[in-house]
Image 1 (spheres, rainbow, N blue to C red):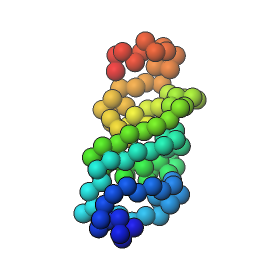
Image 2: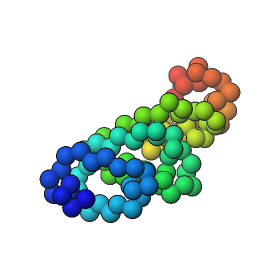
Image 3: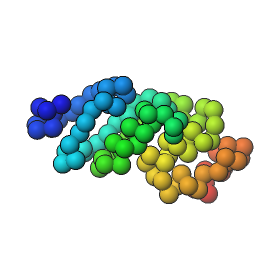
Length: 106
C-alpha cells in the first residue's frame, strides 16, 4: 500500500481487503473499477459502505455486474446511487413493475 500511494499505478484488491485499507486523504484515485458490483447492493452492508466511500472520492467509477436488478428495484437503486445519487432518487420501487419503458423517464 505504501509503495502504491507513492508511485501510483494499478491496484487490484478484493472486497474483504478493501475494507481494511486505509488510504490517506491526499491520495488521488483516478479510477475505481468494481467487478461483481452487485455485491455492493445492500445499503446496510459494510462492503457497500466501503465501496460507496471510495467511490465518492474517486474521479471515475465503473461498475461491472451481470445482475444489476436480479431481485429488487431497491438493489438497483443502491448501485445507481453510488454513481448518480440524483438519478437514484428518482427510481421508485414500482418502476420494476413497469419494465424497461420506465427507464426512459429517468
